[in-house]
Amino acid sequence: MTVGRLIEGRTRQVLSCQTSTPVREAVSTLATQRIGAMPVLDGHDVAGIFSERDVIYQLEALGPAFLDRTVGEAMTSPAITVTPETTVLEALALVTRRRIRHLPVITGGRMVDFISIGDLVKHRIDHIQSEAEALRSYIQMA
Image (cartoon, rainbow, N blue to C red; front, side, top):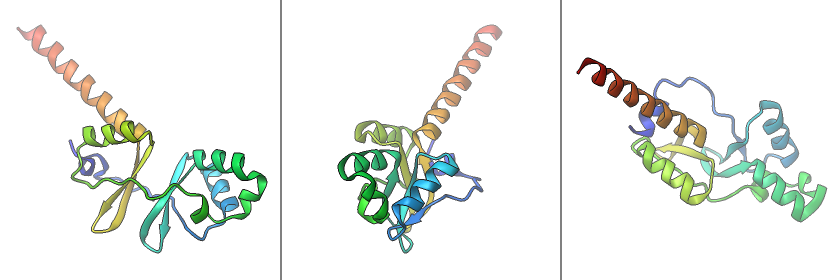
């Protein structure tokens, strides 16, 4: 299964911000939307990712003055990305190896979606449960 199949048919809008967005505004978006991260764009290009971890690390290092900076100064960059052709297992290996939770999905230089480790794990669990059910059915019919 590929990431492209995983995101096929999604209609939700990906929340993002620009590198020039004030950190205070981006933190408010994370909190009010109850999300852990969002892609940071420089125009239409993915420049990085702004996450809860960035907030914690920067607050520890800079204190409250951090809130007056721009997201471009605080984000994790460069963003680690995948394409729709990336398999779910490859994406899972990537987030595990790099210790990250979110991946922008890029096609033709543009972000088409934003997936989380939760999306990938849910797919794997659903797949494993489906296989287990098929095996149970096969055994009962034999």
